[in-house]
Image (cartoon, rainbow, N blue to C red; front, side, top):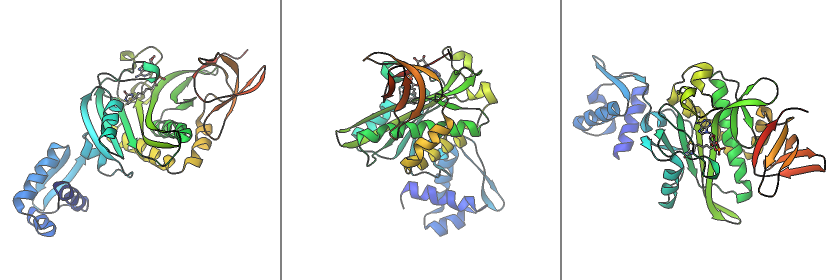
Amino acid sequence: MTTNETRRAILEALADGPVSGPELAESLDVSRAAIWKQIDGLRDAGFEIESGPTGYELVAVTAYTGPTVEYGLEAPFSVEYHDSVGSTNARARELATEGAADVAVLADEQTGGRGRLERAWSAPSGGVWVSVLTRPEITPAQAPLYTLAASVAMARAIREAGVDARIKWPNDVVIPVGEDGDYRKIAGILTEMEGETDRVEWIAVGMGINANIDAESLPEGATTIRDEAGDVDRRLFVQRVLEEFDAYRNDLESVVPAWRDLALTLGQRVRIDRAAGDIVGEAVDVTASGALVIDTDEGEQIVSAGDCEHLRPV
Ligand code: BT5
């Protein structure tokens, strides 16, 4: 058994109640010293394990670390955790070039968080900053569905935390303010990928959720789960995000309907800023590949990318 397998087996045994060191040693066929060392490692990783008369007992899992997020996670990702990293997306890219797959890179703080188009993303300690690296069998044209899946996953997890999260096309998660399409941004996504015209080699979906942070330490227009509803248990929260993301990426047909249900942009007057010129009109739908359908003075137009501004009704 590798160290990791031993660790996992110990956690599995502890999940069923207290178990003694000698019992563990015997059932896993390792020395008592090895068990003792592993228990020490688990404690270091944030598992609160007490030793009582009946043996070791797992009393709580509250820390936010790689092993604690993997523990109980119902999605097939390994978790690489950093207290502080430049950008989880940059780290995911590095892992991709090393051949990794199905890894979630997680950080408490990013010192060089990135938004789209070279914009900066504030990512102080207390947020949920995570990039999921996968190697899906999809075409580059389907990649936007991965981004939409991530926005649905984040919005659903934030809603479970008691916040009225909605999605602004294409991929911002926002909290509506008033009735006119105004909002504050609570989460964003940066998707990066590599591949050829007909094949995605890898895709890294970077999700940034303002969780246990004061909104005043973020740029104007931002809000946080703390400000809207109070702090979350980040371990359980990020597990929900990863589980929802996994479910939607495995059922791509369900993504657009779920996205529509949460969309704040549909029915809005919008302006899309594009290199090829602005488009103004009413957002009426999204296509099966996630492009926005806009009713304009010149008829229906479909945009697959661009910055979207919600305008006041006229
Ligand atoms: C995004 O860009 O919304 C994508 C954000 C992706 C962040 C995640 S965190 C994990 C992973 N690792 C990374 O390095 N990135 C990803 P965009 O739509 O371009 O929005 C950027 C704009 O949002 C900035 O120009 C600011 O105005 C604003 N902003 C910056 N930080 C913010 C925050 N924490 N909350 C809300 N708005 C913010």
